[in-house]
Length: 270
Image (cartoon, rainbow, N blue to C red; front, side, top):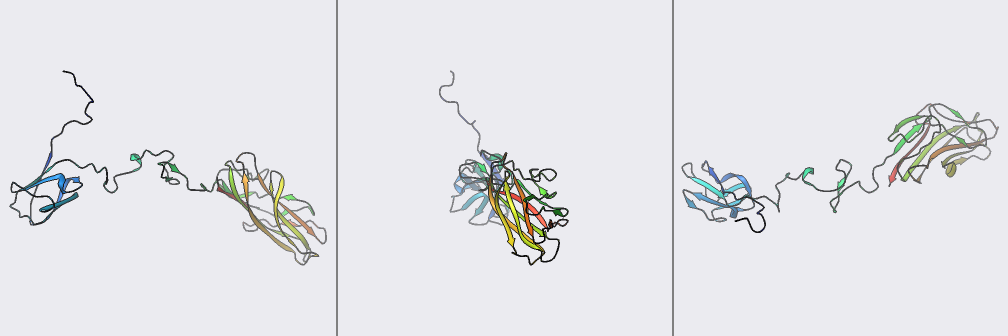
């Protein structure tokens, strides 16, 4: 007669048996892990022992209440091999056992909704930092783009250090942008005003500077930072400088050293 009803999910199997080599001890190791002592039937000298009273078991550890001797005959029957669905053995679950969505790697974590995600804020890239490799003259009383032409790093090749000297990130988000520079006049006590300016898409969005009124120094230091929203496609950032001297001679931005004039940015929030 054909089978009627649902096909059984598992085949029938016989109970597993384990024979022990006894000695004067109370501690033995089971071939298969169990949740507790009720999952095995233990026999010593052909007499079945009472669980909990005569022995306890957990995982693969079997502990007797009284020690055996080398002449004892001891074996157990596994009434059901524990699959540890509630308490899996330590280290038994790895990435291959997870069904979570997303990318599993060193930069993500497993969320409560069973998905892998980047920590809040994401990674801090694209990111770059560049410096001015040689002195650059600034036309008096004009906004002049500074040509930061040497890169410390550029994670996503988003900074143009050869033609436009601008940062055009390819990921939308909020970016921390920073710059610092030394602007030098041609003579002592000649510097009057200096500015370092952030430009976005060709328009000034912020500036930092010094004002020496009638001039009382030769070298001015300008530095600042700000957070800028970038669309990840067409938005770009540049740094411009401005200087006004008493004599009217064109000053210059100090270059040639990695700590004289720098420009950098990195993503902080998606």
